[in-house]
Image 1 (cartoon, helix red, strand yellow):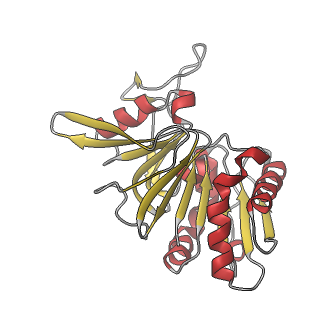
Image 2 (cartoon, rainbow, N blue to C red; image 1 turned 135 degrees about the vertical axis):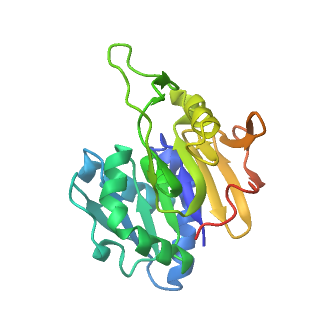
Image 3 (cartoon, rainbow, N blue to C red; image 1 turned 120 degrees about the vertical axis):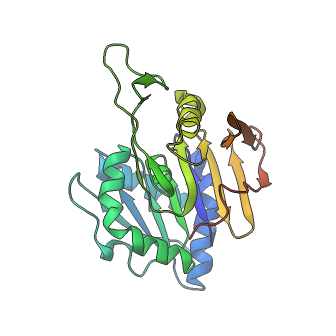
Length: 255
C-alpha cells in the first residue's frame, strides 16, 4: 500500500481524481466489504473541513460506497488510538501544522505500524507535511533570515523541525509554488536542518509506494537534495501530466 500526499488546494469535486488512488487502495484492502476510512481534521474549522474531505473521498470512489469515520479534533486534545482502529485507510487534512502534528503525535507509532501493515495513508497540506521523518513548522526564518514570504507588518517565526510520523524520509512542504515556499525548503536543506526535502504544489499528489513514486495533478513536486557546496533542486512531474520515478536517498522507504 502507499502514502498519498497532496499539496493542498484540492477542495472541489473537480479535484476528486487526485483522491481516487487512495480510495481504490482502501477498497482493495477491504476486499469485497465496504471500505472504512478514518478522516481526521485538526483544522480551526475541524467539523466543516472533516466533512468536506469525507465528501471528496466519497466522490472519488468508483467501487462500493466507502464508510467515512469523521473525527473533528480540537487544539490541545490528542487523537486517541480508537480513531484509527479497524480502518482500511487513514486521511489527515490540513490546518496549522504544529497543531496537526501535536494532535496526532501520540499515535505516530500506531500510524507507522498500520501503514507498514498495508493501510494506505492520505495527507493533505499539513497532513502531508507531518507524514515525513522531519515535520517542518510554519516559521519563515532560519537564523533570523527571512527564507519565505511573510506579512510585511509582522515579523515571522523561526523555522523549527520536529519529529514527524516518519512514513517518508526527509521533509515535506506543501503549497510550494503558490505560496513561494521553495526558498524555505532550499534554505532548510542548505542549513542542514533537514537532510533533504520534497515540496508539493497545490492540486498535486505525490504517491509513494513499494514501486517508487509518482506524481499526478496540476503542478509539480520539487526535490531538494544537498550537494557539495550547496543544494540540487529538480522537479518530478510536469504540470498536467502524470510522472513516475524515484527519489534515491530521500524517499527510499515509508516504514
